[in-house]
Length: 203
Image (tube, rainbow, N blue to C red; front, side, top):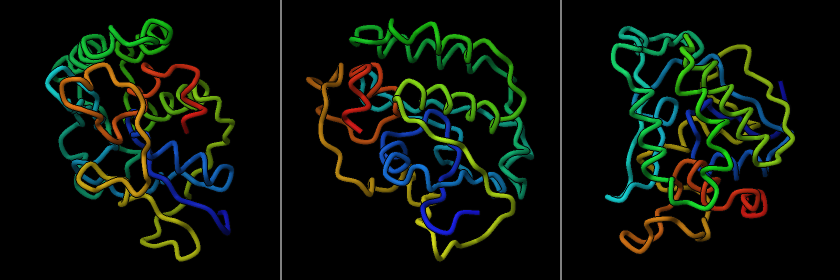
């Protein structure tokens, strides 16, 4: 376990703040793997920019996953075709963006594969996103659950859909900003599809 640095949760298409913090603390960070699965967080949801404003994409999890189960043991539910909804949402929101087509073929398989575990699905996405952002990072994981890390900066609760981002985000071009203005701290895909290879400089 690291002596200094940060502990980050494992999110689905994490918000921009997540990568900003990971970039600051890299290589001194660990990913939380042993926590109990908390509801209504970025662990299974992401916010993107739709023509009507923010749109939340939620990965459904198998019932019973929520209560006192380590996040690595949470299964994805395929009771309805959420993958089609997410992929249609991403296409509908970003087809007009400068770089969607540049990354499209890399994202598409994630909306066809039937990954069993939410943690594994998010991990594969995270590794791909780090590659696109040109962030060289080794993913190390917690080996037991600790309620607090006095020596580390703990982002497990602070990066949250219902909390104001802890970092001061500068604006970049967004497809629908003429309708709703600049929306802060959306999923990293919003930055990536709008800024492409320049995203690394933004972070």
